[in-house]
Image 1 (cartoon, rainbow, N blue to C red):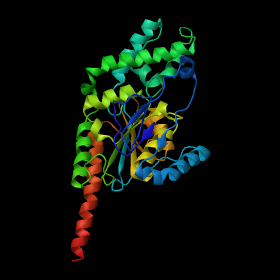
Image 2 (tube, rainbow, N blue to C red):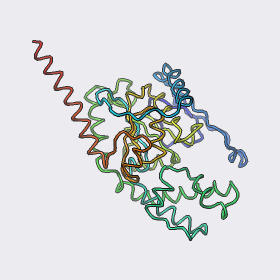
Image 3 (cartoon, rainbow, N blue to C red):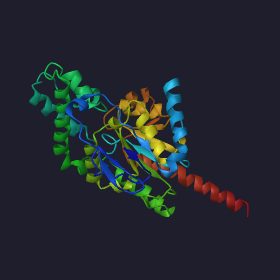
Image 4 (spheres, rainbow, N blue to C red):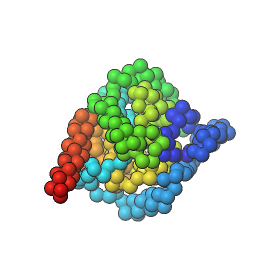
Length: 332
């Protein structure tokens, strides 16, 4: 899978390799079922004009984190240095837990698991940010003893989730998201870098998720914001998904940005853990977890919606501009 500073074609299937130079895509042969079940890594080659120069730096970050453990919580962030917004999707762009509740509850019942109460607490504690394979392995081993059956259950569960969510996705957008995305676009237009391909943009946006690619496409397209995202990184397509920092390191590497230039926005414990391990200033979105739970794993601050975050960003950046103008005026 190739990552580029240009927006990924969200309609591309997961097992196609895209060329950033020619725009051509080359289908890979269909794996047989046995190979599909093997735990093989997916090589993610970063070949953007900006990321190529930053690749050694990104690899160094990954090695440093692997050797020294998760970095300490970042206590402050300079919004005037921010150039990258790295968003999770489920629970961060959309409050999707109520939809996952329906999907998990119904799929458990269809599989024969009826002695578990699937409510909001269950979703928060056992589903939010957790890979489907792990859910099936934990809760359905006696009903689905074979690994291939658990894989198929996960595929069916996500297909059912998309069916449930498709008609409701616009209703569950986190409050203030559209305003934040619109403000980012306005700032890019004011800076002369509105084109998605522009390396001189004021801000870049990445979606970094453990959800299947089909889900990411459905959410971004359903909300009408796919064109606002420069990169989409799918955790299971990396060698290691969240809570490992690799998906966020890949996003920064592809965009050619440093951790101190980016903010990570997450709603789950595994997601916040990944952001903090990538040395990112990590904001917890309180759609599914508590403030205490997200701060415990390193979130530097929490928000209830994007109105809060946008107000903070505007105050910081406008205050800085005012101070610059006053300083220039005093020098005349």
